[in-house]
Image (cartoon, rainbow, N blue to C red):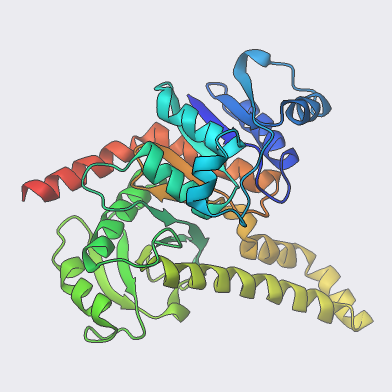
Length: 337
């Protein structure tokens, strides 16, 4: 299997991206990678890591990076030599390349994927679906988390179908429980978008719709997939991640206040480390772009090597499981009903 790693755009690029690429190739013997970015910098990182198997890695020189300050459409048009656009161009033209992992600018990646790679036939717009941990030790997917701010009700149905196939195929979750993010659990709650979408989700035979969900229940383990517009999903995701990080900081700060607290923390070190790992979003990879013709995974801009590795593993599992074919089958079946 061959994947592309966009090595620029993130806060820790290219070091984190190259290190993750090496770790991925060590873990998966059948994986070959194309690295786009500054050739000199990528080679320096490979040398630092002692990686010498040049038969499994190809470097495409692209020293320019698309940043969050670049307007997506302008970046696509004007920054053709950037690491992201070079990666998109290869993904579009090389049939042997299965997917792309990037920690670069979200807007540019979505726009480039939509305009250059294209959508699965029958899908109006691709949607991001990150994975978060639940208090019961499982996971919950959130679709959409930022790709589509303004949507129509039927797109929520499409998000539910794509997200359900993702959880079934990649995470082996049988008949995933789908909820719609709303201001209350009652059927009649919400704005026109959600009121209209509710019966569409309820009557969709290919999903297990269980009703509305309030945001406070996201991590309870009651749901496997939550569907929403990209604006609400992005706010919910970042609020959840930010709250977890601030709680970790608060616990650490409070421990320093007293020797008794320090002693208690020492006795509970194993538990505290487990809680820290549980709440650290870096441990759960990135957001997959469901509905794109090829596999695309968007990592956090602040991703370290372990988080980028998770993103590469997500892309690897998506392609290996034939996820896009499963989505195509579901959408085709809906069209024929």
